Image 1 (cartoon, rainbow, N blue to C red):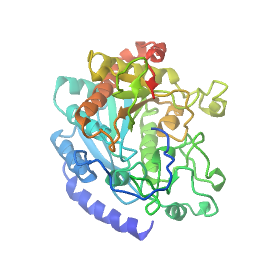
Image 2: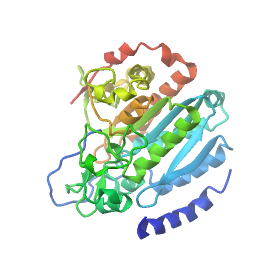
Image 3: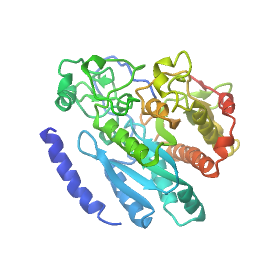
Image 4: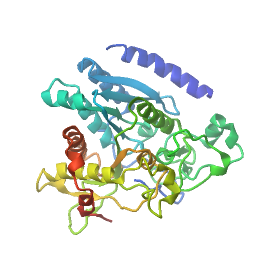
Length: 395
């Protein structure tokens, strides 16, 4: 570990001791241009310092119902948190902000934790039936920079993994400059391409630079932290039943309409291991459950449709037939989790802040639809073929 990380970690640990002492998927290809200032304000979104404070408040006000812990640290030494609520056998893991400019999911998770930590009959019922683990803002360095990639150089990767000294940098290593970000002078990685279905994988030089249709490497501390939380839950519960990943996308329309998409969803990240296209994943055929992912997506979709004729029913199906094993969704789906992608419309560099209240609410409604369906067991009665009736995203 380099000196910068050691100093930052020490400071973070000292702060944390006082705070918690009480009970898209596609990478951008941009031509180099001169970097400019971010055009849109992000002051209305949650910073890492605000997240720490809010989690402290939830931990305290819930009187032990919500247990907040530091799961790991970012490359620059910022805390990556996990908050656990409930004691049921079914495990639901939800993460947000693996891309630092995709911010509404973090606010939605904090609202969810606040609700589940209360003494309401509904919260008590949910806590009895499921265990929910929330990881808000898993890429805090990118959050502070308001960008997709983390804050990490290839030389730091080689420092952590000396066996990669002869390897070329991974394909998801950002060194470009555009009108929003200057990765050339401050490089980083798309953390959501750094996952591998082999949860014990150790980086090997022959696996670099690779490409988007192959697994990642767990070379970033952010992906390692999420992986370690997932492995810990597998060890304790045997399976992570549900994994939900909260993202943002650009502006699109619901197929067959002029309605702007509020939220796109998906349960399709790798081809079925029992199919010809998915034969390279055959070792995961016994754990992969594509139908359950579809049922979970339908549960979220139905919950939003119940709001009637409003922006909350402007829901579409994210592009299908993907092969992205290097994403958290693809890797965890192969390991047996029902997987759900939320892609909220409105990046922070467009109208995400202006309409953040509605966008946050859409995420909350969808998440509650998933949780309620697992608690009631109604999700298991959903016809997986209903998934294919969800209208596609029109680009």
